[in-house]
Image 1 (cartoon, rainbow, N blue to C red):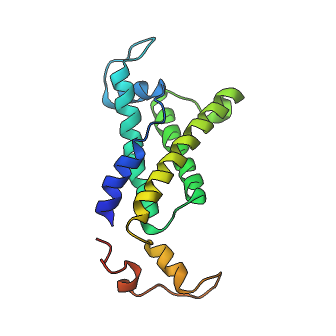
Image 2 (cartoon, rainbow, N blue to C red):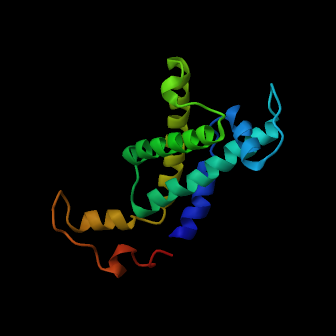
Length: 165
C-alpha cells in the first residue's frame, strides 16, 4: 500500500496548481542560497512549489489508500496544505500569520490551496480506487452505520486479498 501511495501521491501532487512567488524565497532561506530582491528565478519557484506539492501529494495518496477519500478528505487535506505553507513561510520569516493579511490576499490563498487540495484529492482517490477499498472502508463495510465498541478487523481482512502490497 505504501509503495502505491508513494508513486500515486507524487503523480497526484504535481497536478498543475500554479506556482507562487513566496516559494523561491522560502527555498533560498531553507538552503542558504543567496536571496535576490525583486523578481525571483522561475526554476527555484518551480522546484519549491512542485517539490512541496509532490511530497504533500504522497500524504494525500496515503489518505486515499487507507480509505479516506472524497470531498471531506480533500477538505481536511486543504488544512494540511495551508498549515504546511504557513509553517515554512513563518519559520523562515518570509511570511506573516494569515490573520495579518489583507482579506483579498487571504481569500486568494485559500482558494488556491483548496483548488490544489481538491485536484490532488480527485487524482489520488481515482488512483487508489483502482486497488479497491482501503482498510478503513473495509472496516466500515463490515458493520454499516454508526456503532460503538466495534473492534478492528482481523489483519488479513483489513488489507484485502493482496495483503496491501
